[in-house]
Image 1: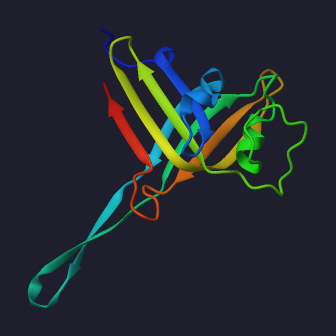
Image 2: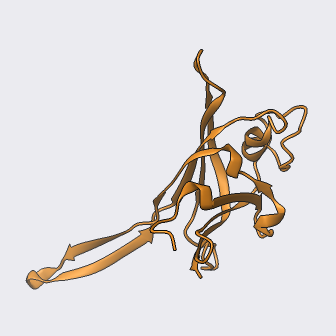
Length: 163
C-alpha cells in the first residue's frame, strides 16, 4: 500500500453537469497542478444586551477548483469551449466570447491500486482560462471553476468518497 496519493494515480474527468464523469473529457494528461479553495463557513458572535452573545453562522463561501494545464494539439479549443460554449469536443473550429459556458461536473479520482479517493464537483462553471507562453516553453495556463456548495434546493454540489 502506498503512503500517499500521487499524481500518477490521479484521473480528472470533465462532463456536462449531471453526466457520468468517465463518459466525459479526460483532463488528466493536461494537468500539472490541482487545488481547491473556499467552502468555508464564517461564524460570528453578535453581542446582545446583558453581556451575552448570539452565534450566527453565515452561508458557506463558493468553492473554487483550479488546474494548471498544458494545451495540446488535437484538442486545442477544449478550455475555450468550457468557458464560452455548450460543447466539450476540443475540436471546435471556432469559439467566440459571446457564448456561455455550460454547467459542468469535474471529478478527480486518486487511487493507489487498493484505495480510491474521489472528489466530485457538480454544477461548476468555468470562471477563467488564462493562457500564457514563454519563448522557451509551451502554451500553458490556469483554468478555474466555481460553484456554490449546494443547489437552490440544498443538494450538495461537492461529494467526497473514499473506498
